[in-house]
Every structure is written in C-alpha cells, then in structure tokens.
Image (cartoon, rainbow, N blue to C red; front, side):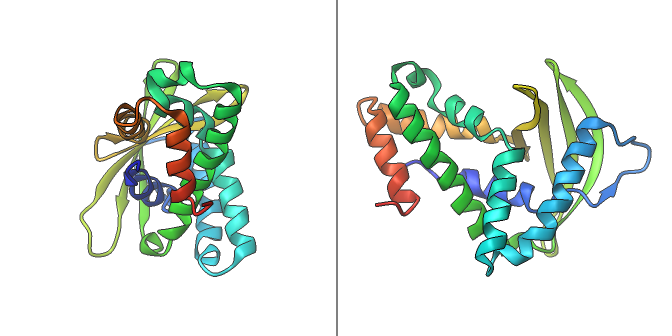
Length: 199
C-alpha cells in the first residue's frame, strides 16, 4: 500500500499557515495567497476535529487551495499514460479522499504551530514562498510553498518541507507500488480505497 508521508508534510504545512511576516520582506501576491488561505484554515482547523460541518468546509478549502488533481497526476509518473479516463476519474476522486482523511486526522497535533513568512523566489514561471514553522517542543522547520497559476486559478502546486517535496514523495511511493503490482492502476485504486476506508 502507498506510504502515508504525504499527510505528515501536508498537515504540518496546511494547518499552520503564516501568522507573522519576517521583517524586511514584502507581502506580494503569492505570499498573500498563502497567508489569506492560511488564516481561513487556522480558523476552521480547531473546529474540524470534532465538528463534521467544519471538517467538510476545511476539506473543501484544502481541495480549493491545493492543486490536488495536478499532484495526483504527477504521482502516477509514467503510468499516467496507461490509465483509462474512467480509471483516472476514480483514482482522482479517491486520491482527494485519502489526502483529506490524512489532513483532518492530524489537525490536533499542529494546532499550536505558527509560521513566519520569508522571501519569495521565482521558479520556472511559478513562485516559491519560503516560510518557517515553529511548534512548541519541536525545532523550527523550513517549509516552502510552490505557488502558480492552474487553469486561471492560483494554486499551491507543491509543498517542500525540510527539503522533501510532496509531489516527488508521492511519485516515488506510487510508482514503487505500481512497479511491484505489475503496473496495475486498478490495484493502486483498490489500495487507496482501502486506505480511505471505502472498502
């Protein structure tokens, strides 16, 4: 079954978006996008642990802000070319659910974490927003956000925590799983459904 490192990276990052700005750095469009949506997530996060309505709002927000479909396609690597349209539809749907479940399951662990905004770095037409997470009892952690345009909407395209890319980690996990299961997209979908509690 695919590994679950995605949830550690994603929950740590999405639930603890910026509250402060490091002196000397301007709040430009990419940073403003990260901060604005972070404030919404921070408002919903504590409620979502025990409130199903808040949880659904939070999941909708995560799916709106994060380029989940793009990450899902990227995670398949070369195997994306052999997936049928129906398989991609089913896979994308369950991928959303797996991410959503993992994020909400770990919200409470990061409730007291805070971000400090850093600089913005241009990267191949997109923008990398640098931040630092501080959580009681843990050393500071660098988390960078790749922000860009996706079909006319601003999205978080990738999250890089302590040098580990969300997209790259998922591609490694999923392609490894597919390699050991004869390249079967159906087998991957079945594993993800099991992980999401759908079977």
